Amino acid sequence: DASLDMKESLPSWAHDYSFTGQLRPALLSPKRTVTNKRVKLPDYASHPAGVSDSEQRDRASNSSIRVYGPEELEGECNLRYACAMGREVLDAGGKACRVGVTTDEIDRVVHEACMERDCYPSPLNYYNFPKSVCTSVNEVICHGIPDYREIQDGDIVNIDVTTYSRGGYHGDLNETFCVGNVDADGRRVVQTAFECLQSALAMVKPGTLYRDLGSTIHRVAQANKCSVVRTYCGHGIGSLFHTAPNVPHYHKNKAKGVMKEGHVFTVEPMINLGHYDDTTWGDNWTAVTRDGKRSAQFEHTVLVTKDGCEILTARENEPVMKWDPDLVQR
Image (cartoon, rainbow, N blue to C red; front, side):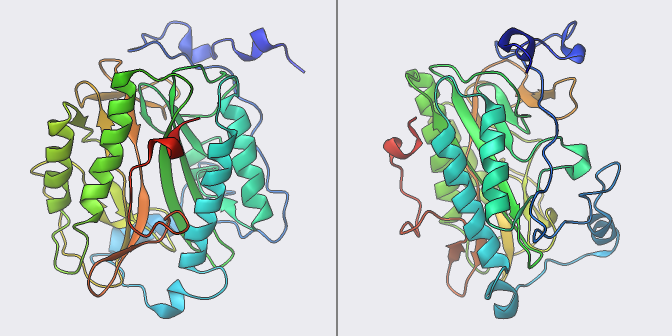
């Protein structure tokens, strides 16, 4: 087994890289494998480039937002089940998050929790993403790759889980955790990210324009002296990991579409302490703030109902989001 110093050394691409903040990557463990024969593999799992042919076909031909009915939502391993499993897996990953634990260890916990639930970890090999979960620390906005870096006292850590059920459906959610003694600015951006999602979900009902969520998120972020990332959006989800609709989180966006009963999509605003501009590390995945300041995010998969929405990835006994700092403190 390699020494800790070796594991925490920089990957080759990072030696001459100009980082925007304090965080540095470490080496990666080998890609984890599917050890449960009951797990259904998505079409990209074995593709050499991780391409989802079904998503590519959908993008080329689909002009409408899918409406999910009871037969797709209910029953063993269907969409509601995939989302419930995602919640259980995120809770397991969140319990592992503490000072001194590597994000690679969180990846191991998430991967094994997926295997135990007959689920495939959707990020694994998706366009060659090398791990089973995204872990985004401090100035990382999203798509952080779990590695051998140990989580430090004062870090904020986002864990983004997606599970793919044997029924062929994805459930996607994430939370940002405060590890140890997080300063006032760190706690502010985490709570603001939560409240941005909370305020957006309160708008979800038939007849709401998808583009209008961004204005509400913008107002909440601005009131807390934060900004909203513009590069990455929420998305339709279900039998495909990413599909229509596109759900931008920023003000004055031009998203198309009106919410209808049966639509299923994610809302996942990424909120920065500084400017909204982002850049991507040399690993071609890790999105970071251009000014090196911290970023936080929360995400749910939601179903539009007759008179509002159901949070399919909600915590047990929490049908409506309620801020509780103890639930994100580690």
